[in-house]
Image (cartoon, rainbow, N blue to C red; front, top):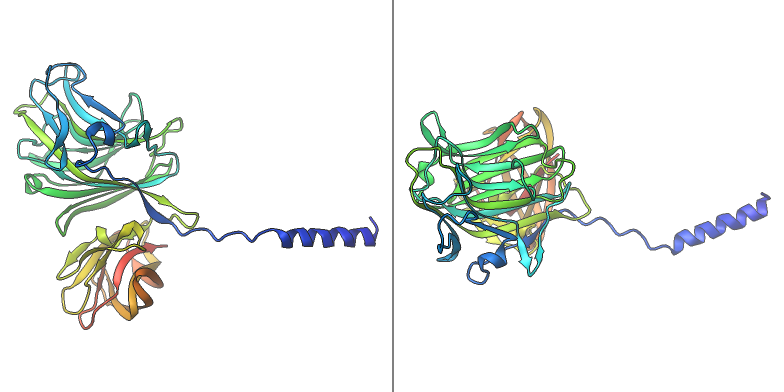
Length: 386
C-alpha cells in the first residue's frame, strides 16, 4: 500500500472514530425494588407465582393461605397432609401482574426482606420444619432453608445452605423462643452463581440477632431455569407435639442489584446494622434501597454498627457512602479499636457522597461502628469493602 492511500485510510478511520458517540459511563450499582406486594391490595394469587394449599385435599373446604390483618397467613392443622409423612401449605415465586412473575437468573444478586410473626404454637421440631426456602421449579432439594429445629434440646431458628450433594451448611442460628409472638425482620441477600454468597440477617426491632454470611456457595446448579423463593409451613409429621398453628408474613420486598458498575457483594446497607441512641432509619430518594440511617452523633451512644466480613485479615479499603448538607464527620471504629475521622461534604440530604479510607480487618466477621460523640454526623447510606 502506498503512503498516500495509507494516509487517506488512516484519516477516514480517525474521522469515523470521532463521529462515534462516546461510551456512556457505567451506571453505579444500586439496589432496585422489583417486587413489593401489599396484602391490602394484592390477594395471594396476585402476589405469588403459585399456591400450594392442601394439594392432597386432606382438609376439604378449608382455605389455608389467605390475607389476614394486613399480612399473608399460612394455617397448618394436624390433619393436613402433603404426602404420607409431611405437611405443606406454601406459596412460591414473586408475581408482578397477570401472567408475569420474576425469575432470578444466573449471576444475579438479590435481596429479599420481610417481616414474620411466629406464634408459640409454631414451635421447633425434632424432624424438619421449614418456614422459607429457595428452590428451582420442579422437584429436588432447596438451595437454602429457614427452619425451626431443636438443637441440643433448645428450640432454634436457623438458615442452612444446601450444596449440590444435598449436604447442609449452617449460615446462622439463634434461639427461637425470644422471637415468638412478635414481629421480627429478616433478610436474605444472595448471588445466584456457581460461586455465590448467602447472607442472612434477623432483627428484633433495632437489635440484630443474626447477621451471617456464607461465601463460596453454589447457588446455581448448571441447568437451572430460574430460582424462586417460597414461604409458608412445610414440616414432617415425624415429630411429637405438633399443634394447629400458623405463620404470618408482611412487608415483602425484593431488590435486585442493578447497574453496569461494580457489583461487589461486599456492600452493607446502613439499615441492616444495629442502632443505638437516637439513630434510626429514614427514607432517601437517592440512597441505595431508598433508605438511610440518620440522627447519628450529637451525643454519646447515638451510633450505628455494621457487621462486615473479610475473607482474610489485613488492610482493606472501606468506602463510606453518606449524605450531608455542608460538612460533617463520622468517627469510625473497627472491632472496638481507636477511631479515625471520616469527613464528608455534600449539597443535600438525598444525594450520596463518599470517601474511602484504609482499615484493618480480621478474618471473618468485623464490627464497624459509626458515631460522633461531640457533634452531629452525616446520615449513612451504605459501606463497601474492597
